[in-house]
Length: 150
Image 1 (cartoon, rainbow, N blue to C red):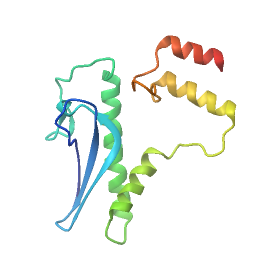
Image 2: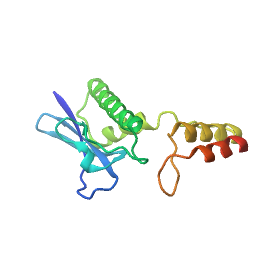
Image 3: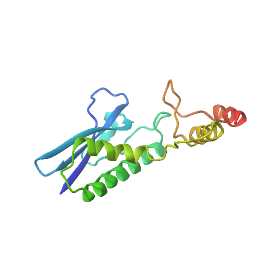
């Protein structure tokens, strides 16, 4: 039976990447970094969720916590689904391909400048796109300016 666990490796309380560990028996033990970043002190290794006493700030809101937990659960399901389709033993390249396919599946290939601007504004408003310097959500005023630009 395959097991999937998520963990952080940092002991410093700053945003750190979340790693996935895929085990299948004693012979297969794969580890890979996911695109998510969380504070290690907020993550519970035992429950595989964020701790209930998490302090919500501008960087980490209640909605973001729910979104992170939902996406990690969906990633776990996607890895298990792909594992059942395998005919050969899984490898690190296979796991990386599954994770990349899960996170980067909706990237448009041929879009015009207008479509890109619309997508950028929509992602900024929804909170999926973060500012480049501080990695925070775009403010209401900035979203309003972007909408005016569009």
